[in-house]
Length: 242
Image (cartoon, helix red, strand yellow):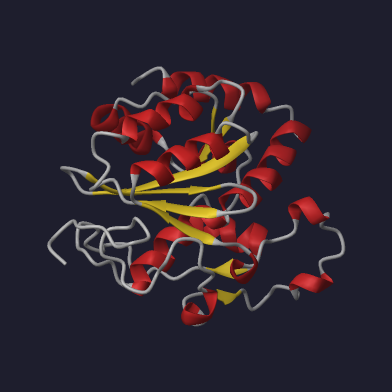
């Protein structure tokens, strides 16, 4: 296919990764459990809401057509929170990743460049929490590249800083709260390439897949320590910049 063309499932040149297909088995070596962690089934203190979601139990859907984007917007308008991450270079945004409680999404903005701004509806809705990790640059890029404004943002990096956790990185909080050690293999990847490699897709997916779990745990601790106002003030500050 020519550069930036879309396959029948709506994602530009992602051979073998149809919309909604569950694909964890192809990536069994991408991440591992922490050596010091208990088995998931032994974590009796976790409620079903807070239990770590296995990748094999959560569909991954690719969004690369206007029809699929509109469907995703309808879904996001009816949730109370969703996780967000972007992959970008100094010049452009190449992927947008979103996770709800039940599905992981990867959006290819290349064939949707003129339609992505319609995501503004759920992103600007103050009744929906948008969860980022170190979201300052992501929010800046959403505004500058797509005219998407963000309101009611929860930043897990800021929460980890306020709580004085030992590690503030996404890899660090995922290990702490999800007992999973994520791969660093694609940190300097070329995200404009098409087709994306299976490693790139898995890396991008994991950037939001575990984020709501971390949000749950951090929000609980922030509330217990009476720091929720600090988080709200930070949200207003960052979202107000763009």
